[in-house]
Length: 248
Image 1 (cartoon, rainbow, N blue to C red):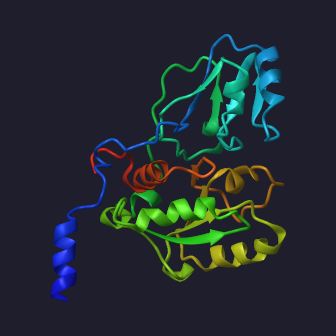
Image 2: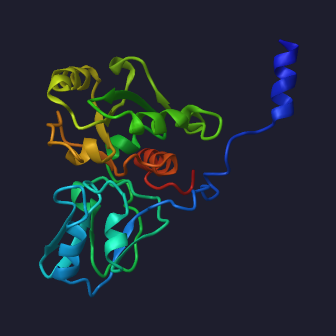
Protein backbone atom coordinates (compact mmCIF):
# COMPACT_ATOMS: atom_id res chain seq x y z
CA UNK A 1 0.00 0.00 0.00
CA UNK A 2 2.84 2.39 0.92
CA UNK A 3 4.60 1.68 -2.37
CA UNK A 4 1.42 2.43 -4.34
CA UNK A 5 0.99 5.79 -2.60
CA UNK A 6 4.65 6.65 -3.14
CA UNK A 7 4.34 5.82 -6.83
CA UNK A 8 1.34 8.12 -7.20
CA UNK A 9 3.21 10.96 -5.49
CA UNK A 10 6.13 10.54 -7.90
CA UNK A 11 3.81 10.54 -10.91
CA UNK A 12 2.16 13.78 -9.88
CA UNK A 13 -0.94 15.19 -11.58
CA UNK A 14 -1.75 13.65 -14.95
CA UNK A 15 -4.96 15.59 -15.60
CA UNK A 16 -4.75 18.18 -18.37
CA UNK A 17 -5.32 21.90 -17.87
CA UNK A 18 -8.63 21.76 -19.77
CA UNK A 19 -10.90 23.10 -18.49
CA UNK A 20 -10.52 25.96 -17.68
CA UNK A 21 -7.37 26.01 -19.80
CA UNK A 22 -7.50 25.33 -23.52
CA UNK A 23 -7.45 21.70 -24.64
CA UNK A 24 -4.30 20.27 -26.16
CA UNK A 25 -5.57 19.53 -29.66
CA UNK A 26 -3.53 17.60 -32.24
CA UNK A 27 -2.03 19.57 -35.18
CA UNK A 28 -4.38 17.91 -37.68
CA UNK A 29 -7.51 18.47 -35.57
CA UNK A 30 -10.61 19.27 -37.65
CA UNK A 31 -13.14 21.34 -35.78
CA UNK A 32 -16.15 23.38 -36.84
CA UNK A 33 -16.06 23.90 -40.64
CA UNK A 34 -16.30 27.34 -42.21
CA UNK A 35 -17.70 28.05 -45.67
CA UNK A 36 -16.75 31.15 -47.64
CA UNK A 37 -19.57 33.58 -48.36
CA UNK A 38 -18.98 33.30 -52.12
CA UNK A 39 -19.25 29.50 -52.24
CA UNK A 40 -21.12 28.65 -55.44
CA UNK A 41 -23.31 25.75 -56.45
CA UNK A 42 -20.41 24.54 -58.60
CA UNK A 43 -18.16 24.55 -55.53
CA UNK A 44 -20.73 22.49 -53.63
CA UNK A 45 -20.96 20.00 -56.49
CA UNK A 46 -17.17 19.64 -56.47
CA UNK A 47 -17.21 18.94 -52.73
CA UNK A 48 -20.15 16.54 -52.97
CA UNK A 49 -18.28 14.57 -55.62
CA UNK A 50 -15.63 13.56 -53.07
CA UNK A 51 -17.79 13.46 -49.92
CA UNK A 52 -18.40 9.89 -48.69
CA UNK A 53 -21.61 10.87 -46.87
CA UNK A 54 -24.90 11.49 -48.64
CA UNK A 55 -26.55 14.77 -47.70
CA UNK A 56 -23.66 16.31 -45.77
CA UNK A 57 -23.33 19.17 -48.27
CA UNK A 58 -26.04 21.20 -49.94
CA UNK A 59 -27.18 24.53 -51.28
CA UNK A 60 -30.28 26.07 -49.71
CA UNK A 61 -31.87 29.50 -50.05
CA UNK A 62 -28.96 30.81 -52.02
CA UNK A 63 -26.32 29.65 -49.52
CA UNK A 64 -24.03 26.67 -49.39
CA UNK A 65 -24.35 24.62 -46.22
CA UNK A 66 -22.63 21.74 -44.46
CA UNK A 67 -24.43 19.48 -41.98
CA UNK A 68 -22.10 18.58 -39.10
CA UNK A 69 -24.63 15.95 -38.05
CA UNK A 70 -23.81 13.99 -41.19
CA UNK A 71 -20.19 15.10 -41.72
CA UNK A 72 -17.51 12.61 -40.66
CA UNK A 73 -14.82 15.35 -40.70
CA UNK A 74 -12.68 13.44 -43.20
CA UNK A 75 -11.51 16.70 -44.82
CA UNK A 76 -11.96 15.57 -48.41
CA UNK A 77 -14.16 18.55 -49.23
CA UNK A 78 -11.43 20.95 -48.08
CA UNK A 79 -8.91 19.13 -50.26
CA UNK A 80 -11.20 19.47 -53.28
CA UNK A 81 -12.31 23.07 -52.74
CA UNK A 82 -10.64 26.04 -51.06
CA UNK A 83 -14.02 27.53 -50.09
CA UNK A 84 -14.26 25.32 -47.00
CA UNK A 85 -11.81 25.08 -44.12
CA UNK A 86 -11.90 23.16 -40.85
CA UNK A 87 -11.14 25.44 -37.92
CA UNK A 88 -9.83 24.56 -34.46
CA UNK A 89 -13.22 25.32 -32.87
CA UNK A 90 -13.88 22.25 -30.73
CA UNK A 91 -17.06 23.44 -28.97
CA UNK A 92 -19.44 21.63 -31.30
CA UNK A 93 -22.21 20.35 -29.01
CA UNK A 94 -25.67 21.82 -29.65
CA UNK A 95 -29.14 21.33 -28.20
CA UNK A 96 -31.11 21.56 -31.46
CA UNK A 97 -30.55 19.46 -34.57
CA UNK A 98 -30.83 22.47 -36.90
CA UNK A 99 -27.92 24.19 -35.15
CA UNK A 100 -25.56 21.58 -36.60
CA UNK A 101 -25.96 23.11 -40.06
CA UNK A 102 -23.13 25.50 -40.99
CA UNK A 103 -24.00 28.07 -43.66
CA UNK A 104 -21.74 29.99 -45.97
CA UNK A 105 -20.70 33.43 -44.79
CA UNK A 106 -21.03 32.81 -41.05
CA UNK A 107 -18.15 34.80 -39.56
CA UNK A 108 -18.67 34.40 -35.82
CA UNK A 109 -19.69 31.47 -33.67
CA UNK A 110 -20.59 31.03 -30.03
CA UNK A 111 -21.82 27.69 -28.71
CA UNK A 112 -25.46 27.73 -27.59
CA UNK A 113 -26.26 28.24 -23.92
CA UNK A 114 -28.36 25.66 -22.11
CA UNK A 115 -31.81 26.96 -21.14
CA UNK A 116 -33.66 23.70 -20.38
CA UNK A 117 -34.66 23.99 -16.68
CA UNK A 118 -34.75 20.21 -16.23
CA UNK A 119 -31.16 19.85 -17.45
CA UNK A 120 -30.01 22.81 -15.35
CA UNK A 121 -31.73 21.23 -12.32
CA UNK A 122 -29.09 18.50 -12.45
CA UNK A 123 -26.71 21.19 -11.11
CA UNK A 124 -23.67 19.83 -12.89
CA UNK A 125 -24.18 16.20 -11.85
CA UNK A 126 -24.77 13.89 -14.81
CA UNK A 127 -25.02 10.08 -14.74
CA UNK A 128 -24.83 8.49 -18.19
CA UNK A 129 -25.78 5.02 -19.42
CA UNK A 130 -23.84 4.30 -22.60
CA UNK A 131 -25.62 2.42 -25.39
CA UNK A 132 -23.50 1.30 -28.33
CA UNK A 133 -26.15 0.74 -31.01
CA UNK A 134 -24.10 -0.81 -33.79
CA UNK A 135 -21.11 1.54 -33.70
CA UNK A 136 -17.54 0.81 -34.82
CA UNK A 137 -16.21 1.47 -31.27
CA UNK A 138 -14.43 4.75 -32.14
CA UNK A 139 -16.98 6.95 -30.35
CA UNK A 140 -17.11 4.49 -27.48
CA UNK A 141 -13.33 4.47 -27.05
CA UNK A 142 -13.03 8.26 -27.11
CA UNK A 143 -15.82 8.53 -24.53
CA UNK A 144 -14.07 5.94 -22.39
CA UNK A 145 -10.91 8.05 -22.08
CA UNK A 146 -12.95 10.75 -20.31
CA UNK A 147 -12.76 8.58 -17.22
CA UNK A 148 -8.95 8.40 -17.26
CA UNK A 149 -6.68 10.71 -15.24
CA UNK A 150 -5.94 12.74 -18.39
CA UNK A 151 -9.53 14.03 -18.58
CA UNK A 152 -11.15 12.96 -15.27
CA UNK A 153 -14.74 13.94 -16.03
CA UNK A 154 -15.74 12.80 -12.53
CA UNK A 155 -14.34 16.06 -11.13
CA UNK A 156 -17.28 17.75 -12.86
CA UNK A 157 -19.85 15.31 -11.51
CA UNK A 158 -20.11 13.34 -14.77
CA UNK A 159 -19.92 9.55 -14.78
CA UNK A 160 -20.99 6.46 -16.68
CA UNK A 161 -23.19 4.09 -14.69
CA UNK A 162 -23.93 0.39 -15.09
CA UNK A 163 -27.73 0.57 -14.94
CA UNK A 164 -30.17 2.83 -16.79
CA UNK A 165 -32.14 3.03 -13.53
CA UNK A 166 -29.25 4.99 -12.05
CA UNK A 167 -28.87 7.28 -15.07
CA UNK A 168 -30.00 10.77 -15.97
CA UNK A 169 -29.38 10.30 -19.68
CA UNK A 170 -28.60 7.79 -22.40
CA UNK A 171 -25.27 8.40 -24.14
CA UNK A 172 -25.96 6.94 -27.56
CA UNK A 173 -23.31 5.93 -30.09
CA UNK A 174 -23.69 4.06 -33.35
CA UNK A 175 -26.28 4.22 -36.14
CA UNK A 176 -28.97 2.27 -34.25
CA UNK A 177 -28.97 -0.99 -36.18
CA UNK A 178 -32.16 -3.02 -36.48
CA UNK A 179 -30.85 -5.54 -33.96
CA UNK A 180 -30.19 -2.79 -31.40
CA UNK A 181 -33.44 -0.87 -31.74
CA UNK A 182 -35.39 -2.85 -29.14
CA UNK A 183 -32.46 -2.81 -26.70
CA UNK A 184 -32.16 0.97 -27.04
CA UNK A 185 -35.90 1.49 -26.56
CA UNK A 186 -35.96 -0.68 -23.43
CA UNK A 187 -32.87 0.98 -21.98
CA UNK A 188 -34.30 4.43 -22.54
CA UNK A 189 -37.62 3.40 -20.99
CA UNK A 190 -35.79 2.24 -17.84
CA UNK A 191 -34.22 5.67 -17.20
CA UNK A 192 -36.24 7.58 -14.56
CA UNK A 193 -37.88 10.89 -15.41
CA UNK A 194 -36.78 13.49 -16.26
CA UNK A 195 -34.47 11.78 -18.73
CA UNK A 196 -32.41 12.87 -21.68
CA UNK A 197 -30.96 11.39 -24.85
CA UNK A 198 -27.47 12.42 -25.95
CA UNK A 199 -26.47 11.50 -29.51
CA UNK A 200 -22.69 11.30 -29.87
CA UNK A 201 -21.09 11.02 -33.29
CA UNK A 202 -22.38 11.21 -36.84
CA UNK A 203 -23.81 7.69 -36.74
CA UNK A 204 -26.02 8.36 -33.74
CA UNK A 205 -27.12 11.77 -35.02
CA UNK A 206 -27.92 10.97 -38.63
CA UNK A 207 -26.83 7.43 -39.46
CA UNK A 208 -23.52 8.74 -40.78
CA UNK A 209 -22.27 6.37 -43.44
CA UNK A 210 -25.17 4.04 -42.71
CA UNK A 211 -28.95 4.09 -42.96
CA UNK A 212 -30.83 6.23 -40.47
CA UNK A 213 -31.96 4.49 -37.30
CA UNK A 214 -34.88 5.57 -35.15
CA UNK A 215 -34.25 7.38 -31.88
CA UNK A 216 -36.65 6.57 -29.02
CA UNK A 217 -37.31 10.21 -28.12
CA UNK A 218 -36.38 13.80 -28.80
CA UNK A 219 -32.64 14.26 -28.47
CA UNK A 220 -31.43 16.79 -25.88
CA UNK A 221 -27.77 17.09 -26.92
CA UNK A 222 -25.97 16.49 -30.21
CA UNK A 223 -22.19 16.00 -30.20
CA UNK A 224 -20.94 15.76 -33.81
CA UNK A 225 -17.75 14.08 -34.96
CA UNK A 226 -16.38 10.77 -36.18
CA UNK A 227 -15.58 10.29 -33.40
CA UNK A 228 -16.05 13.45 -31.32
CA UNK A 229 -12.79 14.54 -29.72
CA UNK A 230 -12.76 14.08 -25.91
CA UNK A 231 -12.47 17.88 -25.48
CA UNK A 232 -15.57 18.34 -27.62
CA UNK A 233 -17.52 15.78 -25.60
CA UNK A 234 -16.41 17.00 -22.17
CA UNK A 235 -17.16 20.64 -22.97
CA UNK A 236 -20.60 19.74 -24.32
CA UNK A 237 -21.51 17.62 -21.28
CA UNK A 238 -20.45 20.35 -18.86
CA UNK A 239 -22.39 23.00 -20.77
CA UNK A 240 -25.42 20.69 -20.91
CA UNK A 241 -25.97 20.86 -17.15
CA UNK A 242 -24.40 24.23 -16.28
CA UNK A 243 -25.88 26.59 -18.87
CA UNK A 244 -22.41 27.60 -19.99
CA UNK A 245 -18.95 26.22 -19.36
CA UNK A 246 -17.94 29.43 -17.58
CA UNK A 247 -17.87 29.68 -14.66
CA UNK A 248 -17.42 26.08 -13.65
